[in-house]
Length: 532
Image 1 (tube, rainbow, N blue to C red):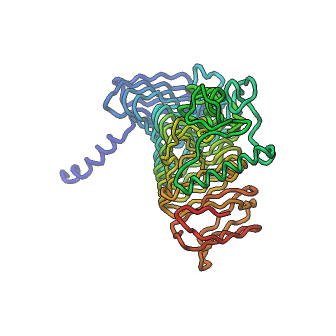
Image 2 (tube, rainbow, N blue to C red; image 1 turned 135 degrees about the vertical axis):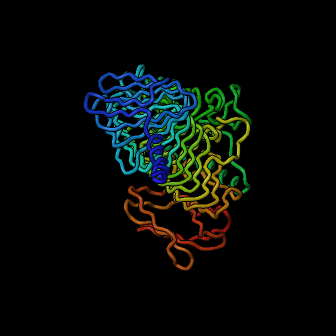
Image 3 (cartoon, one colour; image 1 turned 90 degrees about the horizontal axis):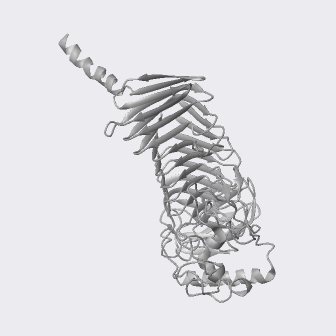
């Protein structure tokens, strides 16, 4: 008998240890709370709206949510760490975040194994008193072996918004936003951004004046010449839009878009930035509002309906992440301080940038499809926009890589046309040391963001002029006719620029790219080879 008691005791203790401090069962317009831990924890219930305030500093508060409500909410304020377990939860909020985490330390949101959970926000009109996202937090870790659908249907509603890092592991996370922006901020006179002088029509390379096309062609030649020398072009645009190229950009110089019409380069410049640089773009408010078309048509939106937005980093280590946005200015994944994709499967389709950062974007092993319908697929704004080329930068062009690809699969597709790109890091280089990459975009004329011979540590080709046909396979073969990869794009794009690499690529070898109406055989003559 004693032996049996000693054997079963650990299981009994384990059951006690695993019990949640608080269990909330939603049932329509009501919520029932079972509170195991009451010391230093205050719980308030109003219908199906539950507020929890925990003063624990060391103990990690564990909360289990289950049931269904069409007008429910959890507001959690914690001094220490917390874990929120979702156990077949279906929670909709009619106004404000259904999951509002006012946490000082990291909160872990767990989708319990083999469960399906849905969080939905219907409206975000009262942004002064309610947070305009389905999940709003300071620092979040998503985990678990279950599924979590995050749905934002209300106007101005984001999917996930955090003031600090967002980390994702194991979970199947689906984020969809479908509401309209709350409005578009008015512009003054037309210009090249979204600030007080912004609001010019979108950039259209095909219909540019011939004189401007010639200037772009000269700029392209200068770019390629400098690329051969391991340098990057700087300076102004010349001609009627720039004058002479400045050595640096200040209020006394004319040149490029610098001088009195250029202003200083902003600290940060992405599709939530309000344009290229202050006179044309303005700053960025606390909500990260802005977005829309780049270069020459920047719009400022009130509460753009982004998918996943963090003022820190977005880090995906594993799991399956799908993001869909549907309105202008709505980025898919935005990490102000960087996006790091270490593993898992990531599928993003956005109207604005699919993946965006004001810092370095790293691909270290994830399988990624990033697609934008009106902007760049992947946009790293390490240098504050491409304006250094036009004289809008600081004194010297930096050569730090803004997009780093070490492994995995990276399909980065922009279907907009010029000047939007598959991989955009302005005139910072891309560093590639592994992985499989196929980007689709137009670039600025024929000049997309590219690696250098030094940063292309895995042999890489830039294919200029390839025609992408919707649903037609793009096939890549080695010199022996062996198929390396097949890609199918769900859109068409004439004369695109595509960055292409594979672990099987070797300098000195021949490769062939075939589509229905295009075939090109080329030799990788150096680490980074341009193919026309």
